[in-house]
Image (cartoon, rainbow, N blue to C red; front, side):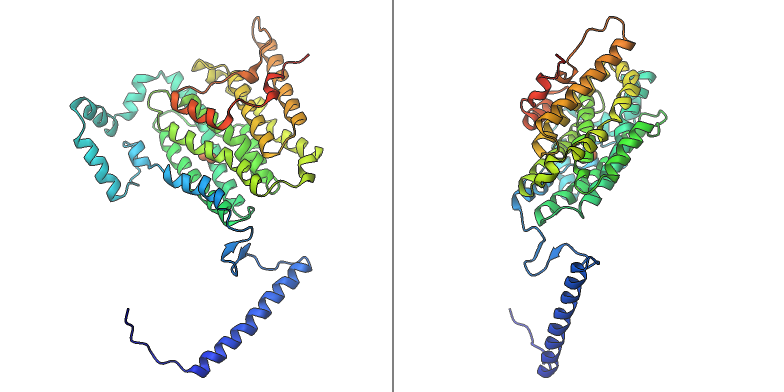
Length: 391
Ligand SMILES: [Fe+2]
Ligand SMILES: [Fe+2]
């Protein structure tokens, strides 16, 4: 490559280099000194000399979360052609048009139906008003959760170490933003009033946002996102809601993030052993008890037992808590037993002829794809579930 090199004053360049060296030593020494005195030193958790964030590259985290998120990135325009989203690139639109040309008449008719404005009419045909209200109440609960997931993941971005973890969290921020705006449009398509957060959702989500440091990983990625995952797994096979499979797959990555992060940066032994820490985390789960009681009529409208749903959520929360080190075996077992006992006591008080049931072994996820995703994450759940029956 040929460039017409321009003349530079060599003395000025030398002076600039020296000035920079002095200024560099001074600003860094000043920030180090301030940090040692407990004052605010360098604001960025960034190691420019190594060209990495503090904590190193951690490429495994990047591969498992950032690379995978981009591989599985989905666009609202393709998944919900009837929506207002126009997020397909030219190449993606070209591919879709080519696929359209290859369709037979029956397939094209289905596609034309979903791209037309009668998506809402399709929902009206599929569901009664009571069923639409029930679906909206359940989806809105997690829709408000998506707003908080967006806020919490953006906050966590400043709490994690390493380039890999930041790349992973950045993808989560992007995915939560997409979940919030896309889910809002899907919920509004049902054409029934969207409920506000219940007091219990408010407490649960504010608890996750206000949690200290990496406890946010527990409140959001383990607890709230397992609820989200389970709601999407429950509804994704229902007519008009197949896009929730995409949400479900994204949430499965988000729930796995704390476990993968703590493999690289384990929770300190003191935090793992702290009874107070475990009690604080278990306390964060408590609003789910009245929350599930409030959602019982809506879930029942769709033929789902609220406590089967809640039991399956809490079993998954227990598995992830144990793997990440947020709870030890004893605390996880205690949590499962406590929830199972409360669910059974409530059912005994409110249902005719209720017989004791191990709600922790229930599962309400429906559909081949979503079931396969959950099998991959949870395998054969932790033993606390099997032993949750009171003696
Ligand atoms: Fe989400
Ligand atoms: Fe998420």
